[in-house]
Image (cartoon, rainbow, N blue to C red; front, side, top):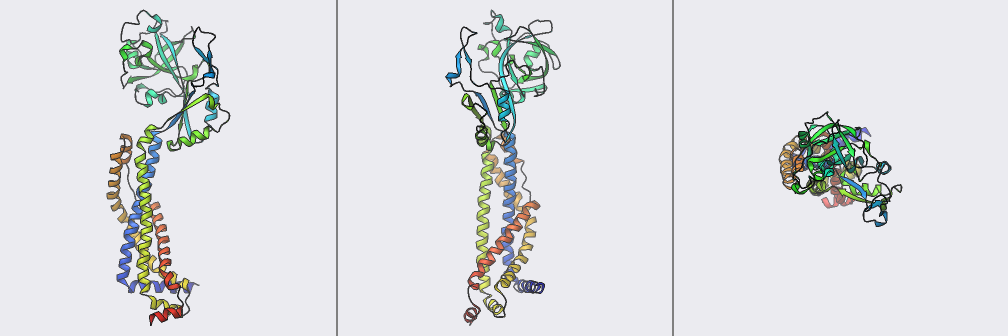
Length: 445
């Protein structure tokens, strides 16, 4: 067996060495094809990696709120002369626990909006920001602020969308208790800084509780029509507190953040399969607009490169088959003699395959180095095109991409190239192998 293999390899080497012109042509074809396939794979890998990182950085989420269109869940309140009371399924911790069982969800934020009165340790009202004097006669409004309770204040819409930004201290964390964020203006009016304490009295209770200031925020996007709104509705008079002081254990909104926004719809559908959640009482609101707007160009580039790679591989297989068919037709005399001498068709196929692979191995090796040169030019052109189509965050991601020729991609090219060579050699040998030795010899004469 070993002798047959060595004999086959020896004949293959002699054939390549003897037909230098054809070997050089085949080498150039294989070098060009393998180089561009290697570059294409590298660009696709870089684009896929960048798209994955971009998806994670942009994020995606869906919110659960009480469905206000379900009128049967709202009845007249018994404790108030006017207003309604919600009697549907509560949006509470049990809902959070059930939804978090869904794959692809990595975190959440529970929020509740309320009102509070701010005082110092002596029970004196803190001074609030006001823009006009029309509410001076309403003592309640003059001393009331809007309080937003969050599990994680960084995930509040005001911070996630850049309306507010922490400039001193830090955000509220899920593990915090009795902490608060206040605006820079409110802190300045009352000579407050990070580490100080203020007292909060909710609209439902008469007792006050101390809260430590852990962060101070600045307003980055001015409030529209701020001069017309009452003090509690001003951005400057909005405070953020942790969720350790929830009175009812219920929330106005639950926001769930997914690991991959591309799977947001599937994640929501998977969550809805949980029968322990009263989905009929809640409305689902998705938030992946930024991802949909900015990630598409990178994903389109990956799809384009995949299509080009497929066309390149198929085209190279056809071109290589054509070249080898012409080559083998010129060797019909040799093939006929080998068949007449008792060589099997598989042995002849292996010889032809070995001949091409001897040339291909050299072409593949050089393509590893040539690929980096081509990648620098081709990659820059493609990434410039992507950057021109994307928003700022996606452009930053695209411009930071580096198309590297890795060993992993090189190994893939070698594997693909070997399969293409085997296919091409097989296709080119079919017309000859269909003939019997006598038919081949008769054609020769």
